[in-house]
Length: 222
Image (cartoon, rainbow, N blue to C red; front, side):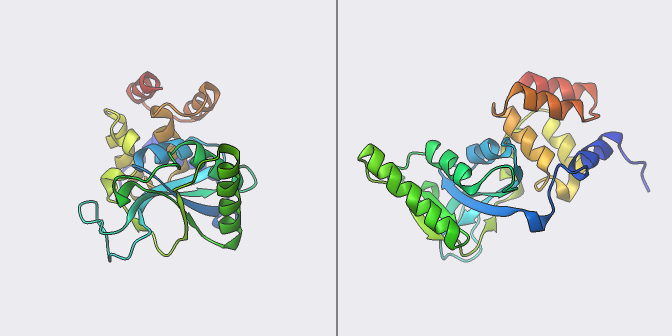
């Protein structure tokens, strides 16, 4: 067996020392907000978000892929700790960061809130109605029940971090299959896209035993 990389150990410890709640303590939200790279990074940087994934949903075409989406939409799925961030708060961020007043030129990029249960459906409908009343504008973003999420190809997952020279490839190699679902990777993906506060970024980096060249590249992007 190969000797373990200390940086991998540090990443694992960060996600096992009470920072990540158990699956039974988390909830899931799914949003279509245009191209899914941006929302993936935005939500990944938020405190209380445990995991992000991007994929295709909202249509009927079997087994959609990026170049054969059929009637599906690009979406981000967010697993979160409701004790830290609420569905209402995630939804408010969703409304604030896509154009809910216009119809997308392609169904692939439409605004849609895909709800997981009755509570989410009620909250989403209430917020949409409130927005319309406050602004006098009609909301074009749809509210629908989520039937199934088809994960997007690997190269779309954590796109901002994968696009960071040196860092993305090395972290993906270290994490392996855990790369997409890692809380730390979600944070770093958000940070390199410009989200999060300096305090958040410094706290995460201070707890990771990364080689200096990786830290330098991350700080350059931050």
